[in-house]
Image (cartoon, rainbow over all chains, first blue to last red):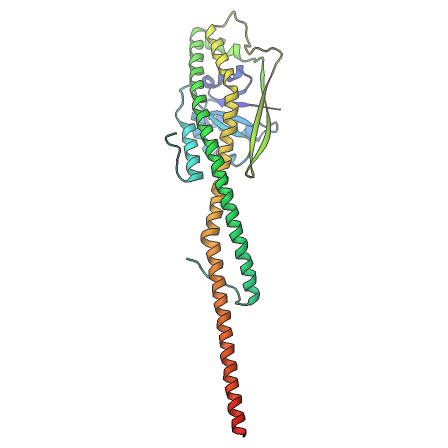
Length: 107
Length: 216
């Protein structure tokens, strides 16, 4: 049994405390990066780490380290400012990588 | 742009190369089938991923709004104080699933706690908006987990498809043509040797006949 971790700024992630996620607040990108690295490498293991979009965009090099592994899944969630389209853009990029063109544009 | 490999033009090499060519063709066919099937699976997953992400982002946006309203009616500290000790723990069990030999995670979540409700605070000091926010957020947990699972699968599958495509292309455009021209060149060399041999024998025979005539 593992816990779900959530990394982001205070306002964006405080709600996740109530539903039993392990919340780590970070005020700067460096802090967030350090936290995510620790969570991903930790012994207990966090299979799912949610990261707010702003930080997710900033730590791409770190995330690509874990892209090939089955766990952890590092997933972006919109922060307090709402979605900036990071998640959708990532899906689009993956489709292009796998198939060569984004053929789902209109669906 | 196929190039002839550097091998000795012998029958031994020829039969070896033919075997390799056969294996390469078979491998190419198998990998191509694998790629096609993976693309099919990928398309299904990516469609699901899109829908999930759209709905999760929409719900989260709403939850954030509820929390902002809650934070406006009570102090920010009070909000945090109410949330900091959850009654329920969300726990995750990870299994793995095999999609075309790509290992993807499957998450099963469970809520553990003594009480069945998720509200971790008394109702006296908190506003009703906070209840709404927490309620809405707990409603999207299953979707969040499913999103994580699908998105990871899509990521893993995408990189595997890319790898397989590279292999298919390498076999199709480099390996197989190279083997083909090499086999062809060896066959031609061997035939040339054969012809040389026949010519020499004929020549020797002519010389022997001429010699025996002179002897008469």
